[in-house]
Image (cartoon, rainbow, N blue to C red):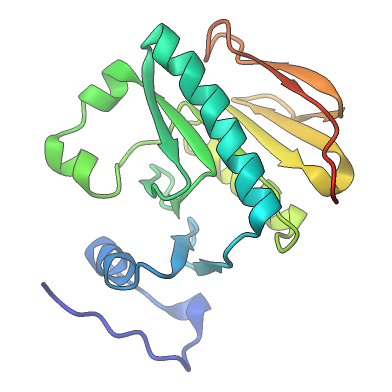
Length: 196
């Protein structure tokens, strides 16, 4: 295995890593949550607190229960980095990929950072997240081919709905969300967030 050392005093906006070097950086530093945007900028994500972790687990659970009933695809946690067609390496808080698209990947592609845009993504804003940065990330998902995305903003008691080719929709909580044609019959009742 090749060891990649990242000096602490480095301008992260100008680091030019190959895909393999980025993969090795992530594998060799599992304690770091690292993403890379479409411009190649490394983004170090801070760990989340208990409330955000609890909420994220609940959203993944709801998505996974629906998926186990329908058997239409695969669900992924926030530990999965997707190599997006637009150039970024991103890790949504939850993601779903339709079965035939997942099966079209080679075993090696499925083992590493899958070179595919999920069909559906969820991002959940934690106290340390910039809303603007998450909105830019959601747009990057849409530009890369994601069909539907939900950005939950507990601080604003809102959810932003992103659809391929359409303007985002912002809803106040509580609300009911539909998976639409992407996640048939998936319905999620979202109450107001507490403890924010």
